[in-house]
Image (cartoon, rainbow over all chains, first blue to last red; front, side, top):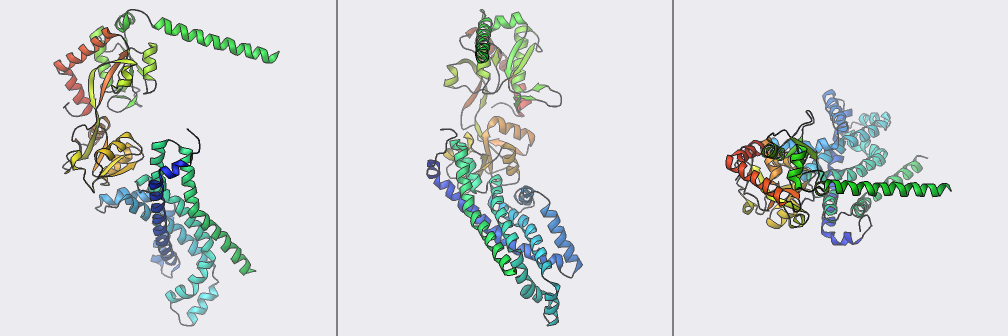
Length: 221
Length: 268
């Protein structure tokens, strides 16, 4: 029995696998939307024509990007409760993921914005658009197209990183996998099944990245 | 030709191993029992844990092994040989302790060993020297006083895949069980307010309570896993010696003193 692949595990423990899968999807989706919005705000702050905003943006990116994700999650899970903000494992894990991933997305978007030729922004400002209007209507739409592949890569990382929830008992796939493994001690089976669940989420993202890269390369020709 | 010499070499090695193993067993199975062997040797050889807080823990700085189990071994040496330092400690694990005792490598096992019917078939046990069992640790002043207070909405922290996690699901089916990688993580989560109670063996909880007196054990044990001292099967003379020792220690108050010294609280 030991070491053998036994697909019955999937059906015997379907309740826990599916609960874990749903929590992983939920946490990833929330963190994805949140990190995209937060990352865009940070990116705009980094390049805004206002020094204090630049500093805040740069400080955020350099600080968060260069510390471990686990640490960010522990700030929410263990740190904030001592200040009177009780957050459960799922919430603190998702917030940690969002804050962490936002720093990478901010970097990607900043690079994208700065790769839009400066003539675009000069022309927009010349027509009387404000800085914010130029950003929202002229620069960001072009920048997003350029950075979509690298942002998608960050989203793939985000889905994989959501396994951090297992450490703070956030009821995700990895959390339940550990419990099922403790019950059955069929680690190869249990973790292979879990790997397939992750692939269901990440492979489409990965294929989308390839598709976009091909499209943009064709468009540039 | 070459192949054959390898085979014969292997056979010789195998035979030697078997012979040595046989001799070893025969020599150690000397007559006269454990007590006579200890007196002749002039020291007690006790199998103890080196990795268990409060019971038998090796201090990495000094290399000394200390704990409740160790002090009982010392008391035994004092009783038999008149000197508590005439003890040789040997590290055992849950896996190695019974074979080591059966081989005669150690005189007795004092290593957080739960008395069970299965084990009674392999070794003899002394009287209970520590009442272990699953219990609850809560913050002092918590409304939770025992199992019955673990109602819907209360969060109980445990270690992933542990027997205590399974037990608490059965005994408090309405409570939410949150499981962590290890005891330290679970205790940290309890301190951060991520749960209302932490559950595992009282021996581990006593260690946490000692580490942070803001937390206390409540509700007593709700499983029964009494620790006993294991002695070679059939050596009833030596079982008697150990039981006499435990009785004397309890009557003289030495047992209570040691218990409080290690566990931080008086025995119930």
